Length: 127
Image 1 (cartoon, helix red, strand yellow):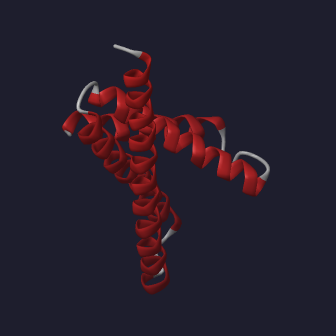
Image 2 (image 1 turned 60 degrees about the horizontal axis):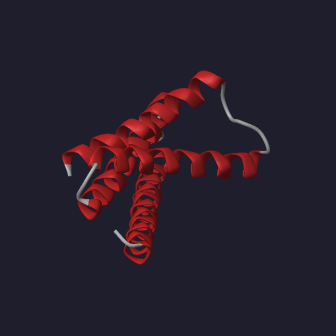
């Protein structure tokens, strides 16, 4: 494979990854708005809100992994896993930027990482 063709392939993968991450964050935004509405209307307790946020992470990374899996066509689980990891990394960077520290303890951060990575990988495998 010549350099130009390989460069084009890498460029396509980067664009596909950005598209899948954008879709994952759009899904996150919409689902968080829905959760906010439900919290406002039904006065949901804190435990249910935390569970809802976790489900939003998993569903969003699943969708992102599914999209990158469909677009890439090969090694779908690996691209889905990568999408989940990048989703978590951006989520962590935004959290650090806003709060200037990690929210919660280390176990929560690791659990969130595993859920995001697993959701993306599952989406990639199912695609």
